[in-house]
Image 1 (cartoon, helix red, strand yellow):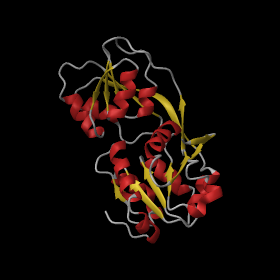
Image 2 (tube, one colour):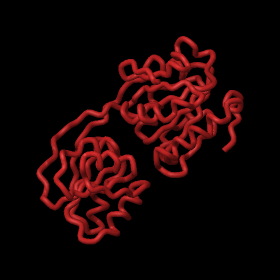
Image 3 (cartoon, one colour):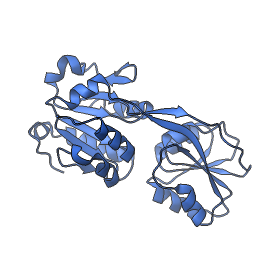
Length: 261
């Protein structure tokens, strides 16, 4: 079972990092917004690593949904956007970037279509559909690219709802201790902004093994890449978990700093 202290999480099976850090082979540091980090931590609980959650972004709801035409569909590019969807009316379609986002929207009662990939896959999914009405992109204050502009350029009637803010958070004491220790850090990063926020709170002295959801994420991490980075085969949580498991399956090489791909 995982233990949560505020918005910091540690694994009691392996001990609190401040108490038994010297016995840890590696620390898995999760920096996504808390709900997503908690989901990842639960999936990784059986792995041989100390798990520390230190969310660098807090999700804060902003404006309520603006008035939209009755035949509108939603476009959702993150789990946080899906969680902001209002109570559904039967038959409303939500186009989702991935399966987890689609699952959240489906649990709210929507008809979901998953692109099972990234924004380009999502655009392709939408363009393959016939007779699509107005589209509303549900997004946060901080985003990369302009999806509404891309949809409009391809002939769709598109607007956006800025439904939440992603507010910067400082690293927790446990995270700082790990990042300045001697044990290796496995650092999965899901967005360029999170990578940039972490970089701004450095430098750190621990050996860091970054895993990026894309090359753009790793590029934002800059000089913090103390060991060869890994890029997920697909921009999905499952692909990121595969990379985490691959690193943790080589504990002796993690200790020595020599990890194969």
